[in-house]
Length: 96
Image (cartoon, rainbow, N blue to C red; front, side, top):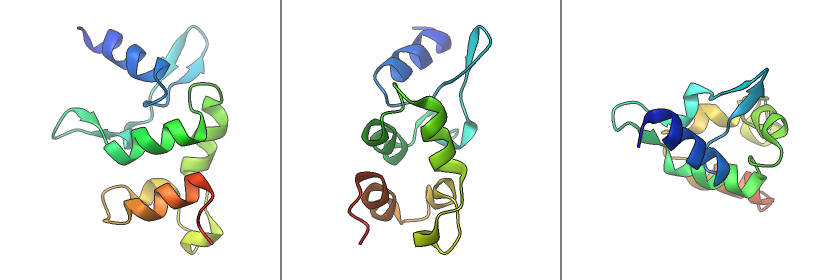
């Protein structure tokens, strides 16, 4: 499987956020663990919870916007920080 097909399959499964721009998809780099050449598992889970397949722009906004429950940090800032449970709770609405 080439990289484009792999990215397409992950996007269609809702695991990888692909933002449509003109006639192609752009994939924000924060989603990928470059050392392991794979999507961060917490990112795949959150993308599915939030519906990245059907609302890529809304999910992109969620990842990059400051969140009051994170002290003003962006959810993407928590990737790899050991706070994956917090991201999952925010995405699933269980953050009270």
